[in-house]
Length: 200
Ligand SMILES: Cc1cc2nc3c(=O)[nH]c(=O)nc-3n(C[C@H](O)[C@H](O)[C@H](O)COP(=O)(O)O)c2cc1C
Image (tube, rainbow, N blue to C red; front, side, top):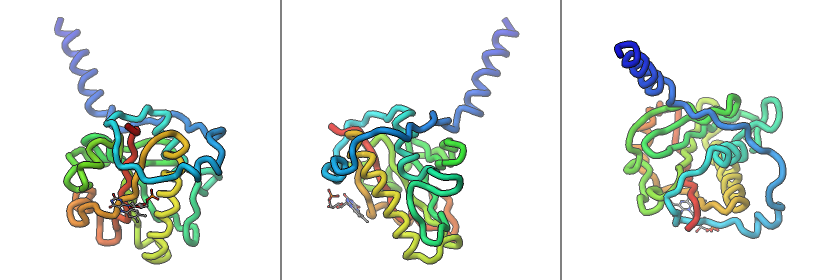
C-alpha cells in the first residue's frame, strides 16, 4: 500500500513538474487552401466560441506564423535578418514561449493574463492570444520591429482565413501591465497582441 501511495505521489509530482511545456506535433507544411481564395477571405473576426485548438492546428498555426522554412530562416522576412521578434502564446492561465527550432511551447509564466491582454469581450472566448515581443537590442531599429511584427501577424490572418478560424490584430492591450506580467526588460517591447479563436 505504501509502495502504491509512493508511486502515485511520484507520478503526480512528475506531472506537476514536467507536464508544463507543450510538445507540438510536427507541423504539416504542405497543401492547404489556394492563396487567392485565402486572400479573398482574410478579415478580422472578434467573436469566437471559446473552444480550444487541437495540437496539430496549433503547431501548423505557429509554424505558419513564425516557423523555420529553411535552415535558419523563417516563414516571414525580417529586417537585416535580425529575427528580433519573440512569439509568446497565452492559453488559459499560462503564457508559453514558442520555440520554433524544437517545436515546443515552453511554459513562461502561469497566471491570469485577462486584464493585461485587455478587451475581454474578445480575448475571453479566444482559444489563445499570441503576444509579439520585440527585442530592441537585436532589432535594426524600432520601426523594423513593428514592420517585422506585421509580417507574422499577416501570416496568422492568412492561416486563420484558410482554416476557418478567427483572428484580430490588437494594439489596445494594457501597455503597463502586460510587459510587467511577462517580465520584460527595458530593451523589450510588446508590439502587438493577436487572439485566435474558433468561429461561431
Ligand atoms: C496594428 C493594428 C492594431 C489593431 N488594434 C485593434 C484593437 O486593439 N482592437 C480591435 O478590435 N481591432 C484592432 N485592429 C483590427 C482593425 O480594426 C481591423 O483590421 C480593421 O478594422 C480592418 O478590418 P479587416 O481586418 O477585417 O480588414 C487592429 C489592426 C491593426 C493592423
